[in-house]
Image (cartoon, rainbow, N blue to C red; front, side, top):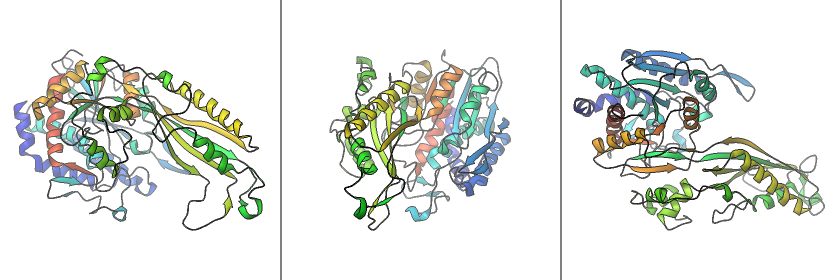
Length: 472
């Protein structure tokens, strides 16, 4: 392992150059005009992997219906390095598409030109999410090939190009390939999340799920003039806002009866995971850009983000929102909100409780308008154990590279592929982040610190050495 660690340190400029080439490809999956670039990014990865001796295959996912326009879905890139039956096989997942980015959004430089600033931060779209981590795995392969060393495990790749646009087609492929390409996999590792803060590495063993709702209130046949009809009809917007105001309190408490009954009580073992975490309330305030935190206590704050459900109001479709004044009564409005779910909440039960409560609240208004509510998406939560051998191996790797024990964290967001891999392959899934909590993955000036990229590459390799030694 020592030879590998030294090689990475000595060749860090080469690895930064590889990242520079990847960032230069604007593989924005959510913009049809950039779809050719997403394909170009997949070809870049195929060539990089092939040049290092990997066997590479691609899977065509078919077509995407983009608001009536048919687009080709970018391929899944599958690759394998090593095929020794005496070794464990580790599957790594990543994505090669990125979020949209324009200079006029407020970037300090061209988002698709990697810039290293005076603080050794590598700024560019996709640097942290997720091109840096994907290339970290490729750097590991290169280091071993150059040193004439075999990897301590067989390594399989699953790289997609639609993660930022719903991962269309991925889950079906995972299910289909579970007993084919993914057969024989012993564990899964995903590097597509971030440290809790900015100073200490972490391992992530839990994610919240999300149930997304659309609530429509419809009244008149067309928009009305408020001067002519105001005060004479039940207004859809008034009804909708009234119902939405009864979903959650300003302190974050969900008002839907029965929601909290499903939440798993916290036990002593879980309580310990909140001890001595490298996180300060000021870091939350810095990320938010204001001091609007609900709790002053770090433990309560993190529990609110990680292990308790939350309900957020996202917007109202059909309402007037442009600058200026418009005295319109909208004929139909749709409110959008979501609930982040946690163990042991069941998505179907959540939907039942929400629909029942919303309809009861609406009925109490006595309005003659009509209400419809539907759940458009109900991705489940995911929870592993920090005591699983896969996590124990990763923890040792963190100590080797960083000299500290990692924080054991959960996250408030969702990575649906995590649960899909776990359920389809029946194997443990580890979330092993490379970047820091302030990387700004979907924001302007997304960055990956050079030290995180280089030490992160060392960490990914060290993990392979450690997981090769444990019994999974």
